[in-house]
Amino acid sequence: MEHLIRMLAVTLRKAARLLPPGRREWAEAVAAEAGQVPPGWPRLRWLAGGLWLVAGEATMMRKMVYWLGTGAVAAAAAWVVWLSWRTSPAADAQTVTDRVRVLVGVAALVVVPWVGRRRGWFGPVGSSLTARLVRVAGCAGVCGLGLTVLRMDSHLAPGPHGPGPFSLTHEIAALVLLGIAAAALVVVKVRWPDADPSVLWGIAGTAGLLMLFVVPLQALVIGYVAGIFAVTSRRSPVADASLAIGVLTGLAAGLAIALAVYELNTPTDRYVDLMLLITFIATLLFAALAGAAAAWLLPGTGESQAVRMARTQQGLLAGSVAGAVCGLLLTNFFVVAVFMLIVGPVLGAGGGAIGGAVAADHPLRSLPVRSWAAGLFVRF
Amino acid sequence: MSRRTAFSAQTLAVLAALAAEPSAWRHGYDLARETGLKSGTLYPILVRLADREIVQACWEDGQPAGRPRRHLYRLTIEGLAAATAALAAAPAPGTRAARPGRAAAPRRLAREGP
Image (cartoon, rainbow over all chains, first blue to last red; front, top):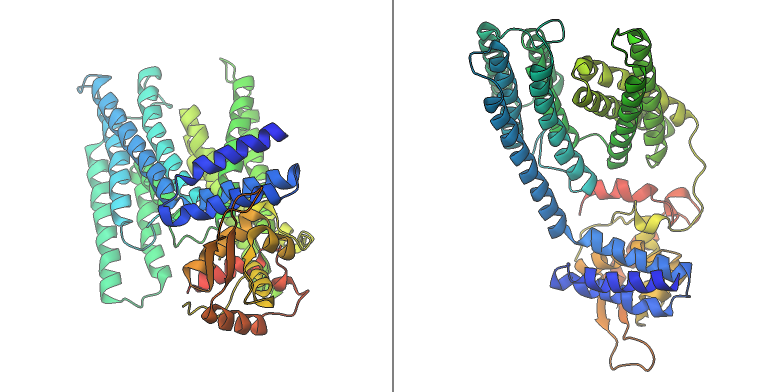
């Protein structure tokens, strides 16, 4: 214990140097007081609180890590584009399809952040570490989809699992549709600034559905990039805790399902029905857990019916995030699981809403009157 | 000076501790013991209060024997007025929102903005 405390004290003094000069003295103050705190756990917790203070105040470092992550994603996207040009001859129709899909994904990764520069649905990024990490990791996941598409082309023969022939008509139709939808959104916002948000959502939703029929994978990629930026923006209705729970639960669900699929996979596809059943049930259950946890973690003040509604809503959102993360992860593992990009969020929303509603009706007992988790939930 | 009139339950606990002896300089561990807050909760609050000039901070004069110099805190004159007003407007002790250890109020207040 003593060794650990000494190590933490040294770490705190060194970590204090990461802070801007005006903030450094606060970390030094925690270190200076540590000697007065009783030895053992109390002193350990005191020093850990100091490190928490440094982590919270070192916003510069947080931004630096975020931009490094963004740079890594940009490099990954460029690498995927390069791979799509390098792997097969351009005369191959499937290669052209892959290139278009990869380029659409990369374009979405460029355009959506560009739109998100201004305060709105897609940006700027939330100030929390969770929002920044999820945004970077989500974009990396979309880059992974590009790799999956390329891998599919090199491993799968043309057929029901293949990417299908390239259709210039479809691509042009989708592009025109996207342009019309974007123009319609701009026109509505400019001419009717007080228009109900449901009108804008209606236009975006209709355009998304039409694109899903015309160019499914491209529409899904654009939808996922938009979704990632929307849930991690400052205006996002998803609370940080719900976002973190949704992502972690989705990853756990995706890994559990992937393991089950690996175990049940046979050359004759004998257990396909069972695999599908496991996938759906696991997604629903994990999303329900995420929904319940998100609802429980939402602080409850105010009128009880409003609190209940807010908790159920956070449950639904956390479940949707869990389902989407599960779908994205599974599609990165098995390209044939691409249907989970749609089914995952839908099942997740259902499971999350159920879990959130149940948890809202059975709130956890209040924590005792004392400080917890070194100020984890404290905001001034 | 802050225009904010509402504080989190934890912040109110710190303000109450400082306002009890407005002229005395208090150190962090002393405040932590009195309020029951952990260092990771207490110090971010002190940082924000100092940013808003509600609290003034300074290092202890001279080098005391056997321990490092302490960082000391007390309310400014404007801070004392703000603390008195905030404490008078705060919910009665024992209610959910008034509990220092429960973070029900801070999230709500964070959205209200300065």
